[in-house]
Amino acid sequence: MDGVGARKCFKISSDAEEPGNYVSGEGVDHYNRYKEDFDLLTELNMNAFRFSIEWSRIEPEEGKWNEEAIYHYKNYIKELRKRKIEPFLNTWHWTLPVWFTDKGGFEKKQNLKYWDRFIKKVAAELMDDVEYVLTLNEPSNYASFGYILGEWPPNQKNFDKFAIVYWNLAQAHKRAYKIFKRQKPSAQIGMAAILANIQAKRPHNFFDEMSTKVMRYVWNWWFLKRIKRHMDFVGVNYYFSDYYTGIGKRDNPKVPVNDLGWYAEPEGLYPIILRTWARFKKPIFVTESGIADADDTSRQWWIEENVVAMERALSEGVDVRGYFHWSLLDNFEWSFGWWPRFGLVHVDREKNMKRTIRPSAKWFAEWLDRLKY
Image (cartoon, rainbow, N blue to C red; front, side):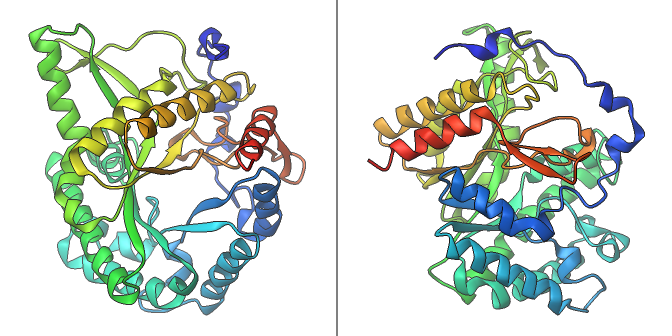
């Protein structure tokens, strides 16, 4: 490894101060340009693609199905299959229909009946050509940032609501698992959990070790333990290695960091895969891992270290099935808006959303091509 990430310093883009940075608009127009984007997948030697179903497109009003949107997703899946790309269908990635949030969203257990109805519709309409489903994406992030820190919608700071939402999301996963299995018993169902490589800042220090054990359980394992009998594989989203000292204090190294200032330790994927395997003995897909890197100076390093981490885990008997880099395209990064650049492919929003493959992606494509021989 050439250590290209070691020189990375934290510098917020000036775009972060522009109001337009926080307007998602039509996104990167993937909804209309998906065939073009799937051709990029082929060019990059990818053989699987994770995508989300937008509930508010399928059911824009309570109980009213949008058949045009359903047809769109059917064709979307067909186009992936045409290119021999395995579709990984994700039913929920934080966004919700307005009518559902007006009813209280996941804050109310009785609202799960609306979730069930949505899942049944997706299962009935879209599962013919789909073998892999992710029910939820990062429920811990959604619940904690939305209901404890108050930084994401619905921007509340209410621990009681956090606990209810988190519990209801676990029930939502289990209910979705059963619905999909009834529709297609052979389907492989899981969810994408954000897992951190949590370590003691001072190994063997009592307080550091205790904080580490508590944080590993609360952040990494609590949710997965609730659903362990209702998942065929574990989806691991990896971005963070966090070091704890004293009583719950996080104290990470200052370098290297990505463009968002997050400490970057891509090799930390190895221990988190091992711990996940030891606890659940389920096949593992790395469902997200990536780095905000507008200059594309650290992305190859990140991917290389991720690959080495997975190879080490495989050599020790861990059943690692696949790797999804976040992301294919630069996109609207939730509360950060447009300025963080995670994409293998640069998107120029000033030039009709022009797609340009980054050098790191070209390197990755060449590496994948060599795997064929």
